[in-house]
Length: 313
Image (cartoon, rainbow, N blue to C red; front, side, top):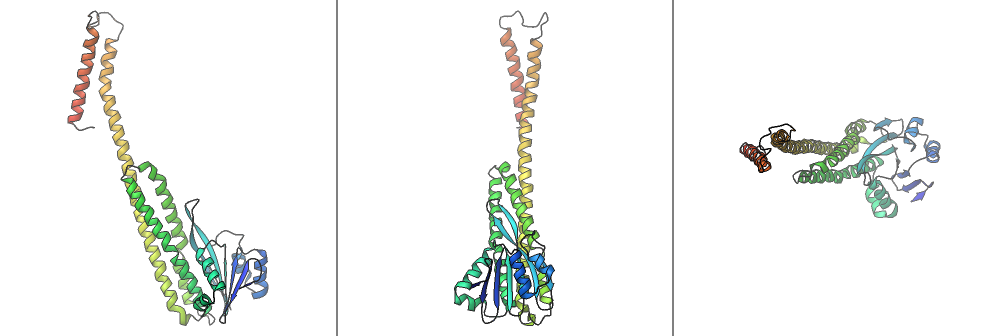
């Protein structure tokens, strides 16, 4: 492995050279401009001081420039974020530019730079095949995140039926946000790969490697279908959770209403016998208080039994 600048590292084989650039800044962009004379628009899009670009493909006279987004999981924020990786592909050169958040690229570069076995295994063919190999590893890294979403969906479902509906409201929103972000990241992959397959450039040798990229199309379709299934699942879980919360609220309201209805006539009786007027029944009777209490209890028990017979609580 050779290191051109602090951020540009190189692995060279008999077939081609791989430049891996982490967090490219002005110095790295200037180097690419002077050394390879890439188009200014492509160099601008490859600069690190920008927001994540939408996936795109630019086919120039002697190279291709591609931008892809892949999901990375921020454990602290519990959020799936887009990580951009840019590619310059030439006859004997492939350049990757990224922010070092994609684990698959980090591991692959370490293997190829440190071990001859992995260089021969992974970089023993054309740069176009190596480009396919990188994309395949990045797509394969999506499946553990999909499995994690499936696990979260199952956990939410279990907790909903353990009367933890309120706690699950936030969890459901987190999963829905991650699925939306994941779908946004993956939605353009099929289009870009199809366009790349259709390129007719001698330096890409697509007549040889077309079948490999068609395999990538199948993988992107599989990922999208799994995401669609997860989206439908979390939507159903959200509806179930909202129904469970509504049922509990209705149950509480029914109980409070029953209590109010029972105590309303009791309050009325107490108010009548508490009026400061003459000739109140039982006012002069030493047992008057207990008569009033007896009337109140009678009404209370009667209403209680009536509501119970109606199964209102």
